[in-house]
Image 1 (cartoon, one colour):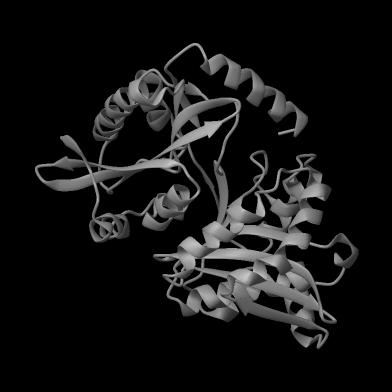
Image 2 (cartoon, rainbow, N blue to C red; image 1 turned 90 degrees about the vertical axis):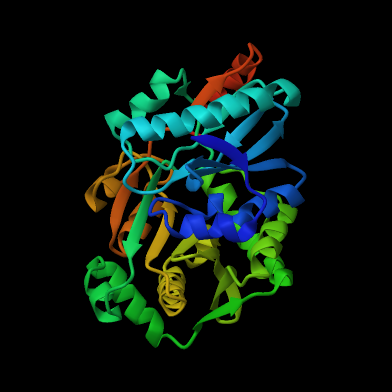
Length: 350
């Protein structure tokens, strides 16, 4: 096996088309977005006899708490590899990144794996000297839905309440869902997003961040903004990424004064139908609370994401668990970042 930098977009995206486990966080455009945000990026591939078998988009993250190299939802590997193959691939990436670390003045390497959470995959990281990170940066537990069945079957597989609210919303002439590919309409999303962040105590991405992300994906028609209007006012909004055969429910918000009006339910259903029209196979609702297995668990849970998790699970689907985010320590400065992230985790009750 040998590792090379990949500079050809077509080679990168075609390889990812062959991989079952992936998210848009390894897409070419996610790299372009991070580059436009001022982050240094590398696209690396592992080849076995000239065949590309693994790839990783690597970002250099510069934050006040510390500087580190980060692989978001990666490395991505082709199917059929055993644990030893995966370990060798990760080891090659680690050797290269440890080399980069010397010149980039970073204190650690962080990996958010896209590998199923099982003992074999956990051992790969333990054997290579990684330790579990104090926080995650991207979802480690997601809720996904196979949207290939007919619409009626999708509806029948939903929670009874979810199906009822969708049908009620469809009959309500005061509810309108509009779809926008205009970056300027982020201004309509922004106030809804801010209120939601305040209500659920999460840190918002800056408006420039959302606009740059939108701009990076819209040129390939891979992103849309859905606006849920009630009597002419935007009361629910969401940004969806449509990449390869996956649709991801990425950023969202809703106004609490209208939580009894089922606008968000109809918005999700319209997004699911849009994803089907685009040929998507999987609808990824993104992160849910880690301690939830069933709707009953969500109703009882005190996790800050419990309500949102129940909402997502109501559309049907299944839970996916990935190996926890892993850190490889380069220097003692890592422990400053470790302490700060632990404090943030406790404050957010995560």
